[in-house]
Length: 308
Image (cartoon, rainbow, N blue to C red; front, side, top):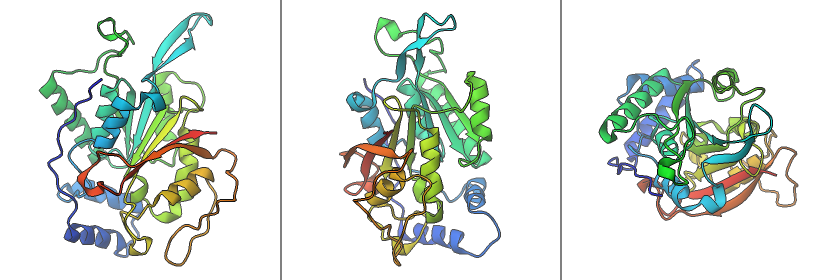
């Protein structure tokens, strides 16, 4: 399978842009952290994190690592009569989706994909981007019947949806569950995080890990894919983006919701003898991708996580 993405025309974030971003978030204000992201989206003239295309690392995973993440559908789901077996698309979530490049990529790979954003302006831009891409390629939202494409094993393009909501709240989750006819808590078979955790203050990491655990479907269908970035940035330099070496993901996703010790420089303290917590996620794969955005070449890592 080939999943085409537009080549990125945007350059790595220059030092002056990093300084401007840091100043925007460090200036004393009563405005909540997430509202400051919304302010930047509303203005629309300073979006240095926008790379102009989906991450090539995700493209490679979807095209080449089915041995790890499986196909984009689940077989053997009981029908309404309780006896027949049906196929359903896997559901994917991209929190902090921005303009929706990765959401569209997941839909092209056959997933029903949702992009979540705190900013209404970002969601509007994402919808405009998807519409423009559909016009260019002649694609439309299709394949909702779940029929095979041209008799092959490939499914047609999945749904693309964008929602405005707070990742840590449940309103948007209930809305999607209602739309999908899902009873109980809505879970996702694939969750993708690239630059979302790095945009959050370090104090929110326990809540981020707990929320990922709550939203991810049980193993073996549920896969959390993290493009670990920026791994090269010292914790002491602050953020956003805050530095995220692999040990941050390991410690917090293994112990979701728990307050973990950090040193004076802002580095999480590792404890290899400590057992994973109940509800913790297990890292099932970890590698340095051959392809990723220019800013992360040679330093980005990919990690895949599942419930134990």
